[in-house]
Image 1 (tube, rainbow, N blue to C red):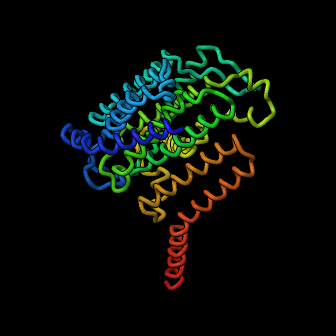
Image 2: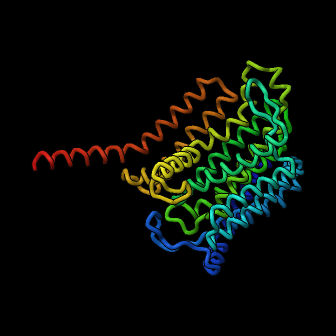
Image 3: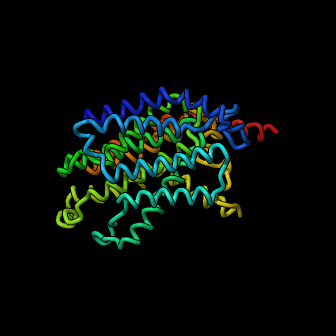
Length: 376
């Protein structure tokens, strides 16, 4: 655990120190965004936050590869994840500068999924009627689709200063806790690509957040959102490859067997808020007869702000919602359900406390409107 803590700390420190320099480079290169009608910010803000994350990740991986435990995590899968991440970050950086069309971005995301496949990062089985071992071609297709869905879910939620950064940090921390504890409980090697990648992602997000929290000095842009989405999806897929399907079949019915199904289900639980926002946006736009990729101002964070919440409070509320789905799920894998239930109730109470001022303000406004109407 100490080596993973060192890994996350190094990634955070590097990202924090590198980001101001990347911000200057982005402004000189023209990789910035002018305020638009749907945007929250009101000043010109540079993008390319993904570049600072990638630099921090690269230096961190190069450094920790010499550690006794973490160094064992480096192999074919970790190499593939790094190469795919490098490709998707570069394409995102081009999009941040030149606004690539949707088809080009989808093709790039699929190609990044292909790079993962070439290095053995692939969904091998699904928890259907016990264990369903997938034919290679089906597993490859599902892998690419899964990678693209997670990438776009993170990209869609990146509409408020600090929002995607904080949500991904919570997701990655939860996934790290699950992968590490799963290795400890089941006797797997604690040196694995999922733990390494998620530790680095936590560090990158923590280091980037001070520059990205409202009011943001720099955006992560597509370069950052797509990089983080790819890293999270790849970590989830590699974790499934470490599970012994024979052990699942033999242990069916007990708690340890239940936890082994979570590598497939956990990403959807942990990413519930981004996936929900993505699904709602697609349905909303299709019903209105628009392209599902047409931007609008009806995302979850827009609605919370319209309720009267500040930008920072809105980010905190969505952080708490993410934690409400993610943390109890991880706890339930290793502790009795009542413990996970208590954790969920505690987080829910905190979330409601954050929402209370806005809810009270809305009630007061409605009461005031009714009073004005009655007087009229």
